[in-house]
Length: 299
Image 1 (spheres, rainbow, N blue to C red):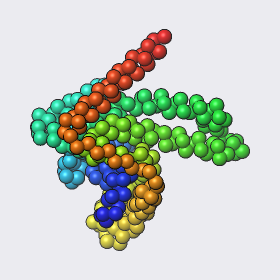
Image 2: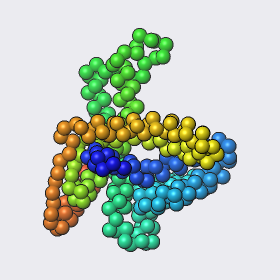
Image 3: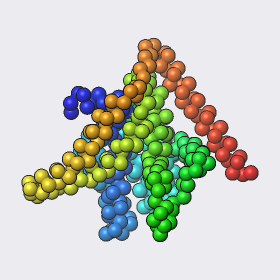
Image 4: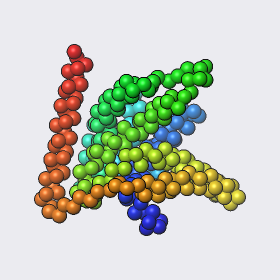
Protein backbone atom coordinates (compact mmCIF):
# COMPACT_ATOMS: atom_id res chain seq x y z
CA UNK A 1 0.00 0.00 0.00
CA UNK A 2 1.15 3.60 -0.44
CA UNK A 3 3.40 4.79 2.38
CA UNK A 4 1.15 7.82 2.86
CA UNK A 5 -1.86 5.62 3.55
CA UNK A 6 0.18 3.31 5.80
CA UNK A 7 1.27 6.32 7.86
CA UNK A 8 -2.33 7.56 8.03
CA UNK A 9 -3.38 4.19 9.47
CA UNK A 10 -0.67 4.48 12.13
CA UNK A 11 -1.61 8.08 12.98
CA UNK A 12 -5.30 7.21 13.39
CA UNK A 13 -4.64 4.04 15.39
CA UNK A 14 -6.31 1.80 12.80
CA UNK A 15 -3.30 -0.10 11.47
CA UNK A 16 -4.61 -3.28 13.12
CA UNK A 17 -7.66 -3.23 10.85
CA UNK A 18 -5.70 -3.98 7.66
CA UNK A 19 -3.97 -7.01 9.19
CA UNK A 20 -5.51 -10.39 9.84
CA UNK A 21 -6.51 -10.23 13.50
CA UNK A 22 -8.74 -11.70 16.15
CA UNK A 23 -11.51 -9.36 15.01
CA UNK A 24 -11.45 -10.91 11.54
CA UNK A 25 -11.37 -14.42 13.00
CA UNK A 26 -14.41 -13.62 15.12
CA UNK A 27 -16.30 -12.39 12.06
CA UNK A 28 -15.44 -15.54 10.09
CA UNK A 29 -16.46 -17.89 12.91
CA UNK A 30 -19.71 -16.07 13.65
CA UNK A 31 -20.78 -15.89 10.00
CA UNK A 32 -19.98 -19.57 9.45
CA UNK A 33 -21.86 -20.64 12.55
CA UNK A 34 -24.91 -18.47 11.78
CA UNK A 35 -25.10 -19.70 8.17
CA UNK A 36 -24.51 -23.38 8.96
CA UNK A 37 -27.03 -23.34 11.81
CA UNK A 38 -29.82 -22.70 9.28
CA UNK A 39 -29.04 -25.85 7.28
CA UNK A 40 -27.29 -28.27 9.63
CA UNK A 41 -27.82 -29.67 13.12
CA UNK A 42 -26.22 -27.59 15.84
CA UNK A 43 -23.29 -29.90 16.59
CA UNK A 44 -22.42 -30.40 12.91
CA UNK A 45 -22.61 -26.63 12.38
CA UNK A 46 -20.13 -26.16 15.23
CA UNK A 47 -17.72 -28.66 13.63
CA UNK A 48 -18.01 -26.92 10.23
CA UNK A 49 -17.38 -23.53 11.87
CA UNK A 50 -14.24 -24.90 13.56
CA UNK A 51 -12.98 -26.28 10.24
CA UNK A 52 -13.66 -22.90 8.63
CA UNK A 53 -11.62 -21.19 11.36
CA UNK A 54 -8.71 -23.57 10.72
CA UNK A 55 -8.81 -22.72 7.01
CA UNK A 56 -8.84 -18.99 7.78
CA UNK A 57 -5.90 -19.34 10.19
CA UNK A 58 -3.97 -21.15 7.45
CA UNK A 59 -4.66 -18.68 4.62
CA UNK A 60 -4.12 -15.61 6.84
CA UNK A 61 -0.61 -16.59 7.86
CA UNK A 62 -1.21 -17.86 11.42
CA UNK A 63 -0.28 -14.63 13.19
CA UNK A 64 -0.36 -14.76 17.02
CA UNK A 65 -3.56 -12.67 17.22
CA UNK A 66 -5.37 -14.94 14.74
CA UNK A 67 -4.23 -18.11 16.51
CA UNK A 68 -5.27 -16.66 19.88
CA UNK A 69 -8.76 -15.84 18.60
CA UNK A 70 -9.04 -19.25 16.91
CA UNK A 71 -8.19 -21.15 20.10
CA UNK A 72 -10.66 -19.08 22.14
CA UNK A 73 -13.33 -19.75 19.49
CA UNK A 74 -12.60 -23.47 19.74
CA UNK A 75 -13.05 -23.34 23.52
CA UNK A 76 -16.36 -21.50 23.08
CA UNK A 77 -17.64 -23.98 20.50
CA UNK A 78 -16.42 -26.89 22.57
CA UNK A 79 -18.56 -25.60 25.44
CA UNK A 80 -21.58 -25.28 23.14
CA UNK A 81 -20.95 -28.77 21.71
CA UNK A 82 -21.04 -30.40 25.16
CA UNK A 83 -23.60 -28.00 26.61
CA UNK A 84 -21.16 -26.46 29.09
CA UNK A 85 -20.86 -22.87 30.23
CA UNK A 86 -18.17 -20.86 28.42
CA UNK A 87 -16.02 -18.69 30.69
CA UNK A 88 -14.19 -16.22 28.45
CA UNK A 89 -11.72 -15.11 31.12
CA UNK A 90 -10.55 -18.65 31.84
CA UNK A 91 -10.46 -19.30 28.11
CA UNK A 92 -8.05 -16.39 27.65
CA UNK A 93 -5.76 -17.64 30.44
CA UNK A 94 -5.76 -21.19 29.03
CA UNK A 95 -5.13 -19.91 25.50
CA UNK A 96 -2.17 -17.77 26.58
CA UNK A 97 -0.71 -20.68 28.58
CA UNK A 98 -1.16 -23.12 25.69
CA UNK A 99 0.42 -20.79 23.13
CA UNK A 100 3.40 -20.07 25.39
CA UNK A 101 3.88 -23.80 26.01
CA UNK A 102 4.01 -24.37 22.25
CA UNK A 103 6.22 -21.34 21.47
CA UNK A 104 7.91 -19.55 24.36
CA UNK A 105 9.31 -16.99 21.88
CA UNK A 106 5.86 -15.39 21.82
CA UNK A 107 7.00 -13.58 24.96
CA UNK A 108 8.96 -11.35 22.57
CA UNK A 109 6.04 -10.79 20.19
CA UNK A 110 4.45 -7.35 20.42
CA UNK A 111 1.45 -8.45 18.35
CA UNK A 112 0.83 -11.33 20.78
CA UNK A 113 0.74 -9.06 23.81
CA UNK A 114 -1.36 -6.45 22.02
CA UNK A 115 -3.88 -9.15 21.09
CA UNK A 116 -3.98 -10.57 24.61
CA UNK A 117 -4.25 -7.18 26.31
CA UNK A 118 -6.95 -5.98 23.89
CA UNK A 119 -8.99 -9.12 24.53
CA UNK A 120 -8.52 -8.77 28.27
CA UNK A 121 -9.60 -5.14 28.06
CA UNK A 122 -12.81 -6.10 26.24
CA UNK A 123 -13.52 -8.84 28.80
CA UNK A 124 -12.74 -6.90 31.96
CA UNK A 125 -13.05 -3.19 31.20
CA UNK A 126 -16.15 -3.04 29.00
CA UNK A 127 -18.57 -3.26 31.93
CA UNK A 128 -16.95 -0.25 33.60
CA UNK A 129 -17.09 1.73 30.37
CA UNK A 130 -20.74 0.72 29.96
CA UNK A 131 -21.41 2.23 33.37
CA UNK A 132 -19.70 5.43 32.27
CA UNK A 133 -21.71 5.54 29.04
CA UNK A 134 -24.91 5.00 31.03
CA UNK A 135 -23.99 7.98 33.18
CA UNK A 136 -23.44 10.02 30.01
CA UNK A 137 -26.86 8.95 28.73
CA UNK A 138 -28.45 10.11 31.99
CA UNK A 139 -26.84 13.51 31.43
CA UNK A 140 -28.33 13.56 27.92
CA UNK A 141 -31.76 12.76 29.35
CA UNK A 142 -31.44 15.72 31.71
CA UNK A 143 -30.56 17.89 28.71
CA UNK A 144 -33.75 16.85 26.96
CA UNK A 145 -32.67 13.87 24.83
CA UNK A 146 -35.16 11.01 25.03
CA UNK A 147 -33.15 7.80 24.63
CA UNK A 148 -36.20 5.53 24.46
CA UNK A 149 -36.98 4.22 21.01
CA UNK A 150 -40.03 6.05 19.66
CA UNK A 151 -43.15 4.32 18.41
CA UNK A 152 -43.13 3.60 14.67
CA UNK A 153 -46.71 4.78 14.43
CA UNK A 154 -45.80 8.31 15.37
CA UNK A 155 -44.13 9.77 12.30
CA UNK A 156 -43.90 13.17 13.97
CA UNK A 157 -41.55 11.70 16.57
CA UNK A 158 -38.78 11.18 13.98
CA UNK A 159 -37.01 14.40 14.85
CA UNK A 160 -33.29 15.13 14.52
CA UNK A 161 -33.03 14.57 18.25
CA UNK A 162 -34.49 11.04 17.96
CA UNK A 163 -32.29 10.23 14.96
CA UNK A 164 -29.28 11.28 17.02
CA UNK A 165 -30.44 8.95 19.80
CA UNK A 166 -30.70 6.02 17.38
CA UNK A 167 -27.22 6.71 16.05
CA UNK A 168 -25.84 6.94 19.57
CA UNK A 169 -27.32 3.58 20.54
CA UNK A 170 -26.12 1.95 17.31
CA UNK A 171 -22.53 3.08 17.89
CA UNK A 172 -22.53 2.45 21.61
CA UNK A 173 -21.38 -1.20 21.60
CA UNK A 174 -18.56 -0.52 19.11
CA UNK A 175 -17.39 2.50 21.09
CA UNK A 176 -17.42 0.61 24.40
CA UNK A 177 -15.42 -2.33 23.04
CA UNK A 178 -13.01 -0.04 21.21
CA UNK A 179 -12.40 2.10 24.30
CA UNK A 180 -11.81 -1.00 26.43
CA UNK A 181 -9.27 -2.38 23.96
CA UNK A 182 -7.56 1.00 23.54
CA UNK A 183 -7.20 1.54 27.28
CA UNK A 184 -5.83 -1.97 27.82
CA UNK A 185 -3.23 -1.70 25.05
CA UNK A 186 -2.23 1.93 25.74
CA UNK A 187 0.79 1.13 27.99
CA UNK A 188 2.25 -1.25 25.38
CA UNK A 189 1.66 1.24 22.56
CA UNK A 190 3.37 4.04 24.52
CA UNK A 191 6.37 1.89 25.46
CA UNK A 192 6.86 0.18 22.08
CA UNK A 193 5.74 2.81 19.57
CA UNK A 194 6.20 5.99 21.62
CA UNK A 195 2.96 7.64 20.50
CA UNK A 196 -0.65 8.13 21.56
CA UNK A 197 -3.49 8.54 19.07
CA UNK A 198 -6.25 10.63 20.66
CA UNK A 199 -8.61 10.06 17.74
CA UNK A 200 -8.15 6.28 17.62
CA UNK A 201 -11.37 5.25 19.45
CA UNK A 202 -13.58 7.41 17.21
CA UNK A 203 -11.61 6.42 14.10
CA UNK A 204 -12.19 2.75 14.88
CA UNK A 205 -15.90 3.31 15.43
CA UNK A 206 -16.07 5.16 12.13
CA UNK A 207 -14.61 2.32 10.06
CA UNK A 208 -15.04 -0.98 11.95
CA UNK A 209 -18.61 -1.46 10.70
CA UNK A 210 -17.21 -1.55 7.14
CA UNK A 211 -14.92 -4.53 7.82
CA UNK A 212 -17.60 -7.30 7.90
CA UNK A 213 -19.08 -5.88 4.67
CA UNK A 214 -15.66 -5.83 2.97
CA UNK A 215 -14.87 -9.37 4.14
CA UNK A 216 -18.22 -10.76 3.00
CA UNK A 217 -18.13 -9.09 -0.40
CA UNK A 218 -14.47 -10.02 -0.76
CA UNK A 219 -15.29 -13.69 -0.11
CA UNK A 220 -18.04 -13.60 -2.76
CA UNK A 221 -15.59 -11.93 -5.15
CA UNK A 222 -13.04 -14.72 -4.65
CA UNK A 223 -15.56 -17.50 -5.26
CA UNK A 224 -17.32 -15.79 -8.17
CA UNK A 225 -14.01 -14.90 -9.80
CA UNK A 226 -13.09 -18.56 -9.74
CA UNK A 227 -16.28 -19.39 -11.65
CA UNK A 228 -16.34 -16.53 -14.13
CA UNK A 229 -14.14 -13.49 -14.72
CA UNK A 230 -17.25 -11.42 -15.52
CA UNK A 231 -18.83 -12.25 -12.13
CA UNK A 232 -15.47 -11.52 -10.53
CA UNK A 233 -15.40 -8.02 -12.05
CA UNK A 234 -18.97 -7.32 -10.90
CA UNK A 235 -18.23 -8.34 -7.33
CA UNK A 236 -14.96 -6.38 -7.46
CA UNK A 237 -16.97 -3.21 -8.14
CA UNK A 238 -19.14 -3.93 -5.10
CA UNK A 239 -16.08 -4.54 -2.92
CA UNK A 240 -14.50 -1.32 -4.21
CA UNK A 241 -17.28 0.87 -2.79
CA UNK A 242 -16.80 0.09 0.94
CA UNK A 243 -13.03 -0.05 0.44
CA UNK A 244 -13.03 3.42 -1.10
CA UNK A 245 -15.20 4.68 1.78
CA UNK A 246 -12.72 3.12 4.24
CA UNK A 247 -9.72 4.82 2.59
CA UNK A 248 -11.40 8.23 2.34
CA UNK A 249 -12.48 8.18 6.01
CA UNK A 250 -8.93 7.31 7.12
CA UNK A 251 -7.41 10.08 5.00
CA UNK A 252 -9.94 12.61 6.32
CA UNK A 253 -9.40 11.69 9.98
CA UNK A 254 -5.64 11.91 9.43
CA UNK A 255 -6.03 15.58 8.41
CA UNK A 256 -7.56 16.52 11.77
CA UNK A 257 -5.25 18.52 14.07
CA UNK A 258 -3.79 17.26 17.35
CA UNK A 259 -4.60 13.59 16.78
CA UNK A 260 -1.16 12.29 17.80
CA UNK A 261 1.23 12.88 20.66
CA UNK A 262 4.76 11.51 20.88
CA UNK A 263 5.97 10.05 24.17
CA UNK A 264 9.63 9.06 24.02
CA UNK A 265 10.93 6.60 26.64
CA UNK A 266 14.56 5.58 26.04
CA UNK A 267 15.45 3.65 29.19
CA UNK A 268 14.53 -0.05 29.19
CA UNK A 269 14.10 -0.01 32.97
CA UNK A 270 11.72 2.95 32.71
CA UNK A 271 9.69 1.07 30.09
CA UNK A 272 9.39 -1.92 32.43
CA UNK A 273 8.30 0.32 35.30
CA UNK A 274 5.69 2.06 33.12
CA UNK A 275 4.23 -1.28 32.01
CA UNK A 276 4.20 -2.75 35.52
CA UNK A 277 2.67 0.33 37.17
CA UNK A 278 0.07 0.82 34.42
CA UNK A 279 -1.31 -2.70 34.62
CA UNK A 280 -1.08 -2.67 38.41
CA UNK A 281 -3.27 0.47 38.43
CA UNK A 282 -5.67 -1.18 35.99
CA UNK A 283 -5.89 -4.24 38.27
CA UNK A 284 -6.49 -2.21 41.44
CA UNK A 285 -9.14 -0.02 39.77
CA UNK A 286 -10.87 -3.10 38.32
CA UNK A 287 -10.94 -4.95 41.65
CA UNK A 288 -12.18 -1.82 43.47
CA UNK A 289 -14.91 -1.24 40.86
CA UNK A 290 -16.04 -4.89 40.99
CA UNK A 291 -16.16 -4.80 44.79
CA UNK A 292 -18.19 -1.59 44.75
CA UNK A 293 -20.55 -3.01 42.10
CA UNK A 294 -21.16 -6.18 44.10
CA UNK A 295 -21.67 -4.18 47.30
CA UNK A 296 -24.22 -2.00 45.53
CA UNK A 297 -25.99 -5.05 44.08
CA UNK A 298 -26.17 -6.76 47.47
CA UNK A 299 -27.62 -3.64 49.07
